[in-house]
Length: 218
Image 1 (cartoon, rainbow, N blue to C red):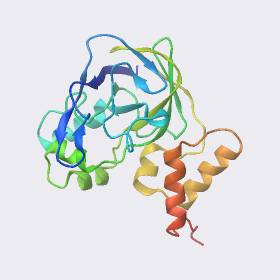
Image 2: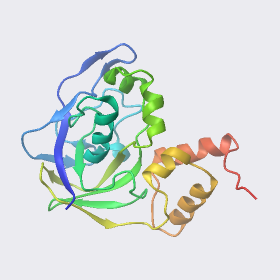
Image 3: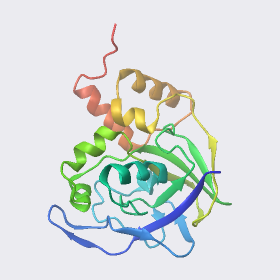
Image 4: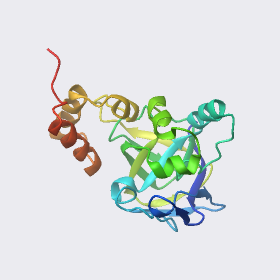
C-alpha cells in the first residue's frame, strides 16, 4: 500500500549566501496538518519566484529514491532534507504522469504538475560537489503538486492514484528528456480536456520552442 511516511514543513528560515534566506529546512511535523490551495498550514517559501504558488503547493519525494541517494552518498537522507513536504512509500512519484491525481487520506486530492528543478540553494543545502549536476543526471526529481481538494494530511495516510491522463509523459521522462514528442502528447491531452498544464510546464514548452528544440525527427 502506498502511504505518506512523513509530512514536513519549514523548521526555520536559514541564511543563504545566494538568495539571502531560504526555507528549504523542512522537518517532519508531529501532528496532522491542514492543506489548502497554497500548501501546508505553517509552511512558507522564501524564494517565491521559483517556489510555492498553486502549482507548487506541495513537493513529494519517494522514500525509495531517497534510499538510492543514501547509498550513493553514504549518508542518511531523512524526510525533509530535500525540502520535500511529503515523503512517500510505495508510490512511483517519478513515474507519475503530468496531471495524474492522488487521493491522500480521507479528504485531500492533489495533482502532479511538474518535476522539481534543482537549484544552487539545494546544492548549498546538501554540501555535495556538483550536486545540481548529479541530481539532474540521476533523474529522480520528485514531483510538485497542486491541491485539487483541500483536506488534512498526516503520516500513515494511504495514497491512491485516482486518475491518469494517459498521455504517457511522466515526471521523470519530462525532467530527463523533454522533447517534441512529449510536448505534442501534452498539448493533445490538454486540447481534449484530459489535463490542464501548469504555468511552469507552459513556460518550459515555450522556452523549448523558442530555442528551436521542438522539431520532430523525420
